[in-house]
Length: 407
Image (cartoon, rainbow, N blue to C red; front, side, top):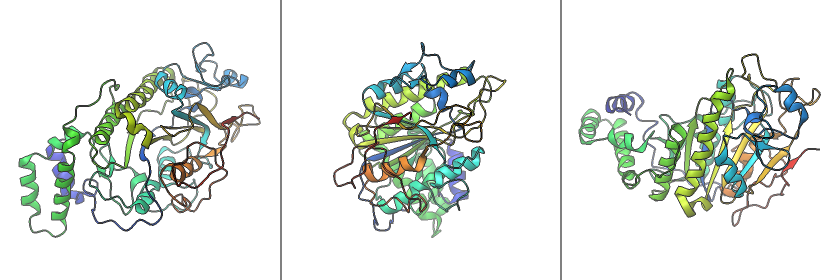
């Protein structure tokens, strides 16, 4: 982040994305629990390539070019596999630290990137009335965090999922954020905002956050992270965790998952980055992995049939991941709907059998200490539990599932 850009943004917005309000309301229904890392794969990730259903004969019929072959796939459970570039995900899965939730997503199909992302980040379904704040924002309102670095976006902006009464801090990269707040810039902000009752607290809040970042900035980034947006974000997230600055929720984006053409060439490096970054993050934070839960989501999957440009178009059912030291990993969860002509949504898409909010509900209750997730999820009531997580001490008991069903 350039100094001039930082100052200009702070001046125009009042630092809304940069300086959290430090006066929180009292907690209403969350006791706190794991640290939450929310990763969003923007563009609509093709779940049928990430986690191919190798035991489904129709898969190879509808994907004559793009199907991942049985010989090259990384086997999971005798029915599903992982793309060969996703070796880091396979390592986590084999260690019991990664759960796959297939045929998941918005219950009602929404093929617009903007609308689908906004809907999912707000914690509702397509067609529902849109609340003003995001699902993470509503969780934070119950949690009432108190430290300057409790809630951060490791990107240039705060995602819609974090909007709400508790302001998150968008820091981008730690080292760039620190550079943008050198002594000259502090003097410039103080001079510009002196005596202004609205903007002076903003400047003060920015300085408090920058000072709190000191211990994390003093730590070097961990080794073995892949180059790129996600690896850099998770490396900085690990620095915040190891510096013990009070991080409770972090959001990270990974872009570039919209592959209407030449999908095979484009998705390989993205999957290598995703798996490699998560595996490096687990090793980097060490014992803190046991109190950290990562959820990975995307706005929709892709059409079942490949297109003429060797890509895939916007579809419906996709794939989610949950990772952490208390995930019931090593399993593919959800009811597999099949890829036959009569099984598809709208005659062309993988049908959603697991509403994405079911995953969030179990995360909120079992790992984050929320008593009742209904309000956080826009009034939606969760169904029977899939059994994705080991309940934390004192968490409400949930009904366990048994992973994949192909009936």
